[in-house]
Image (cartoon, rainbow, N blue to C red; front, side, top):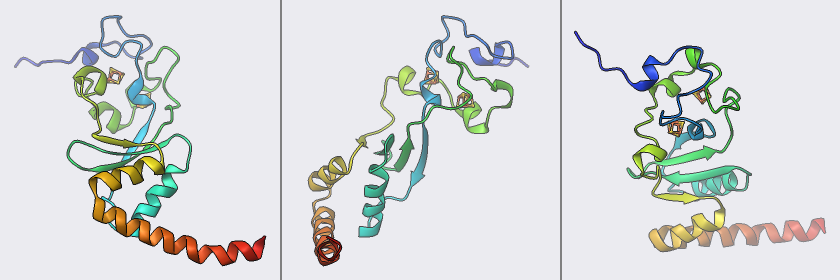
Length: 157
Ligand code: SF4
Ligand code: SF4
């Protein structure tokens, strides 16, 4: 029985350098973030959770091409070497070995997301244009929340 092997499968371990012609040579981009799926927001509290996420540095929220929502942390893996290779290639996590370099943004030529939000302002603008009813509900609740906070803020001043 013959076996089709990917270019990565025939590399020598430990992986210290990559052949210059390999699609991943000098890249390592997929080792510089963590993304996890989150629920499609619907309630005020869920939108406010997104608001909270987006107040943090190096955090983004995106919607992929299937309409699924993700929380992304832009953070470099501790095992990514200066040569942009994996320092623990043989024992790397399953999610890493399951990831195909054919599907990544660099090689597929397609962005992983349809909408990306780096700030609350971008998220609110998305709601305004794409989910106008949710936008109205959200803004109403925000105004109520801010009104309730005002006396408390004044008494602390
Ligand atoms: S899989 Fe894609 S993003 Fe990851 S190192 Fe290879 S070319 Fe870069
Ligand atoms: S463990 Fe290796 S393959 Fe996985 S993210 Fe880190 S450097 Fe990349």
